[in-house]
Length: 584
Image 1 (cartoon, rainbow, N blue to C red):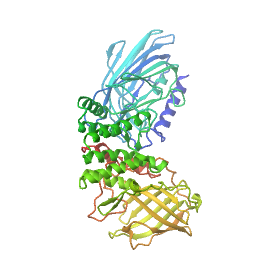
Image 2 (spheres, helix red, strand yellow):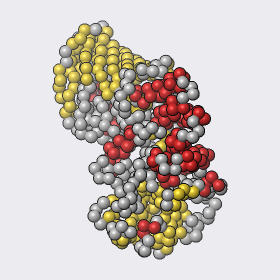
Image 3 (cartoon, rainbow, N blue to C red):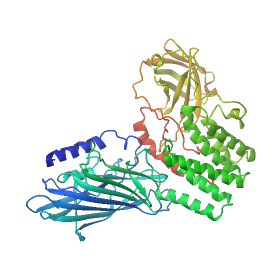
Image 4 (cartoon, rainbow, N blue to C red):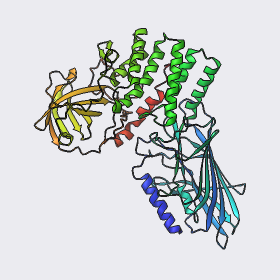
């Protein structure tokens, strides 16, 4: 392949990968550290081929709380001049990149060796490798390539992990290697961990929000290896740029420490509880839970650890609540497709036990309140007393089953509906906007007269009697149900929370079709503003405080909310990182 065409393909790849929405940056992307990259030649046409490369991503041991870890990168390249005359080239390698938020972190401890001899490099400026938005520092070094003789180039440096605890990620851009002559002869990519590698700590077959491990890696001891032969890297080729999604070393070390503790002291209930909690932490992710095989293993291990803990200490209310937290949070996501699961029932049983043992314990009460929001039909709070319908009767499916004959064609009902300003119980005024989608998703928006906008989302069902019912959750994971009568292309609320007592809910249809993308069927989480505390969806009085959500708020991401999510992701993930700081 000729040099001009290669450069064009590289440019097209960078534009398509980093300027257009992709899986890597489409989901509340965190700041990204500079990616590992192959070196590339300058702008000259070259006959130098990359005959082989070996890249070692050696993840370092790290026990600092919530650290994303770092890796020592050693990239070795065997280059050969296939032309008829020697070439003197200025090869280059990026040492900085836009992190996606306008900052430009750099790799550190960089060294360059040619044929085992360390050589100097100079800092030069070239466009950012991913965003092309501005010039950033690169390392440029001069290399002489004699005809037909292998030249070994080694680049080593330290790279920080990217992402949100308890997960981390590293990225490797093979694409820059396409600038050399011909194909890349072979590539060996080695991910090395400071402990045995498994599908529990190397996340495969699952996107964790901002990265997805490249498939095809072979596990062996502490390593995962990828091997490729005779390839031209590119977005359309069989070998593309690589990603590595991991449990952060600190989070995994907590599990290893927990396992070591229970092995030494198998009758220590606290040690079993700490192991259960550490395992739970790396099972859940920002949007639900890990559905990969390793995630399922972790879920089973966390259950087993909680069971052992409670067998040794059955009267510990907080450990019962922590177990309920695990079961209910998993069950909530399953409920969207399956209705109430056995895990949901068991989770409610565990929190019921916790409340009997310690009815005023703040940790127990926080978790109980959250579970009642997750399953409003299974656990009902009246004042400060809880009832548990699902423990005394067979729960009805959630959402409603399809045995009810639908009264409306979903497409005919879908659209945007707006009310006038409504007077709330706390004397504030709010305009209600309801957006119904034909796939039965719904976005509920409250627009205060002072300019604040609150969002909640979920789904709606056809009651079969000329009315529809919406089920939504806000960013604090509060669940609300509103029943509307649909007539004359408008909605009239006939059942709604008591805060709206005395208010007439009349919503007029303003748009026949909602001008927003159809949201995913998989529920995701709405981030909170890092600047302004988000008020609950139904606006409490000043004396009411929003509860701490012990299982990282769960709600459908608003379909037009990508920019909202990026802008407000900081506080959400701070809460996720610190959510398990409490004992249970």
